[in-house]
Image (cartoon, rainbow, N blue to C red; front, side):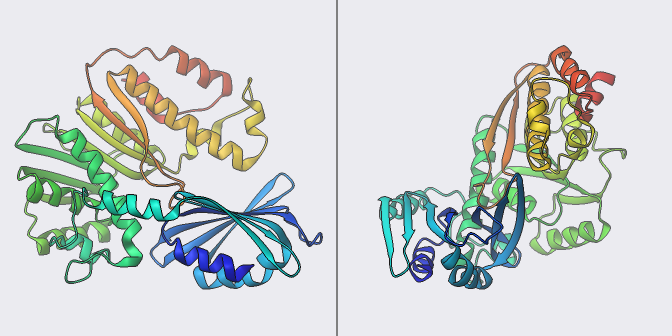
Length: 380
């Protein structure tokens, strides 16, 4: 069984969403079900195993070598049913003592062809001298896509496509962007490349981060790339003074917890026309929420409570932004298989207005939670 699955995993590399193991053969196993998902990391492709035991879920990350060893041993001997889900194809395996029955639905070849066709329309193209993609390891030194980084290449292009869609409606030949919690993700450098090299507009990009060593390194990289109007500063967005000039776009990718709220608040109060926010570590609501109504059932288990609180946090942020005059879409930034923090708030200012926050305040009072953006807007 494991040999067949290993071969299918290799053939479907970069397309697998999850593999579910169920129906125990070995009744001594403490886990009734296990789900495995691949995701990208600095160490390469890792597999996250979600192990279900009664009402609890346990997580374990494995590198590919360890995962295949697990397939050969525990996966092979413990479960009778295995379901592999990938782009365009689902494969069901039934494991018998001396053989494995395999049933396939969908068309993996068709999916591969579709992906190839999409590649032709990518904004960032193979062969272009994009130094950030070389340093990130997505491009080789001769600017070809590194095969193992193809998913990362698609993710980066997805982000640029979202930016491109907004910019095409701005109609400007100069743009100022603030990037909150920029870190050293290289996306800031790619945004600068997109505007200056592809769109041929003057881009003034300012990145904020808490870490001095990160800021120093980013400024050195910008200098090495010749990106004269890309500057990085050490800044705590919750208390330090921010850029006072006109800003066309605010980006906040994985700014931790309430740092996202302060970035959104800055954008709202300064009438920034475009916001792109991928929230992360939504702890505030989870730590303060109490039972108080029809949603109490979602607060009984820690994992569900955490996920519910994260979705509630981003729903409140989206609602406040709408009340402040923004058109808000919540889109999937990357596939869940690669990152559970995969929701982006894409916001376009239509008309500034006085927000009506009564429903959100009532919800906050009913469940006893605090939410920083709600607090900031209420105190404005």
